Amino acid sequence: MLNYLLTDEQKMIKDLAHKIAEEKIRPVAAKYDKTEEFPWEVIKVIAASDLFGLFIPEEYGGMSVNVMNLCLATEELSRACGGIAVCYAASALGTFPIVLFGNDAQKKKYLPDLAKGKKLAAFGLTEPEAGSDAGSIKTTARKEGNYYILNGTKHFITNGGDAETYTVVAMTDKNKGARGASAFIVEKGTKGFTFGKKEDKLGIRASSTMELVFNDCKVPAENLLAKEGMGFIVTMRTFDMSRPGVAAQALGIAQGALELAVKYSRQRHQFGKPISSFQGIQWMFADMATEIEAARALVYSCARAVDAGEKDIGAASAMAKLFASDVSFKVCDMALQIHGGYGYMKDYPIEKYLRDAKITQIYEGTNQIQRNIIGLQMIKDLAK
Image (tube, one colour):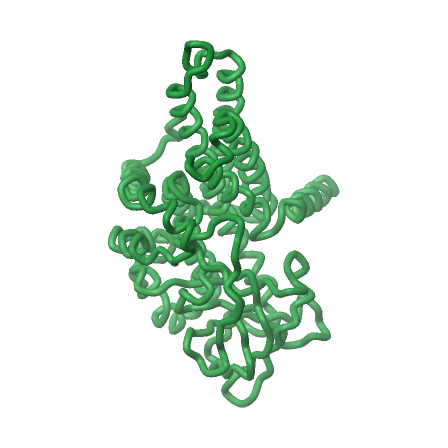
């Protein structure tokens, strides 16, 4: 692969994450995929390595908010296990609203523990009737004195149950549609905040995906992020920063699948020679490697644009997530095909890569929604 002119610091981050992936994640990936236990032993290693500080400002205990560095770490961790890697990346998703819209008191209260990995974060947006259509949120937040009373259910929440800090979007004025949504910081253990069903998933099974249930949950008014009615803006700005991370997860899964396929092709013999010597297999590798490299170039460029403070980054973030996730699923499918019948069996790890890749086309906005975002932005730009 190209070196992308990484700085010495970025090379160090990449090497560190690679070492954790190979030594701590790969040996236990199959176990966590089977048991669906949350990988606390690995999370503690990641925390001790200060990788949680990559998306939090220095003044609050982090190393600076750097999406490119987050992508490098997420990509390397995902090479070994997309499920374990998303436990890390999802904490960034839950943290970004506080980084972007929290006041100084909120940041001082929550970010230091998140920066050290002492606590994890999660983002609560999706509901049974509101996924891509954020304006259909049913969870409500009613102001009473110095509190907001939350009622409703969120589902498909990554890190649900295991995170300590939740950023939750609820309707403070249902008559205003998306403009009536507001964002809140809700702590695990708050009275009226409980957890419902834990999902039994196709892939990323090491990560917890759980319902958040709010039943007259009293959240201090000081936990409101920004101001009432800004929940949709908080969400969109958060996704602009987090979608390159999903793209990096997809990229890492694809790279890991390609490496497994190449290794297998050199060991598997048919017609008296390794299948890696067959032109048909070599062409598959060429297509896989080329598309992965194209995805990597897009993801890195987008991450750097976010870090540079470029405005109107939504379409670029959507492109990165869309392209990388589609490439990931395609590459994993081809890698499994190269394994033949063995690839379909759980004795080989490649089937897990295909299962893990699929979710990257779905969460943080389905790829159909990404196409909507991109298309509308193109129409807007060309109308100027």
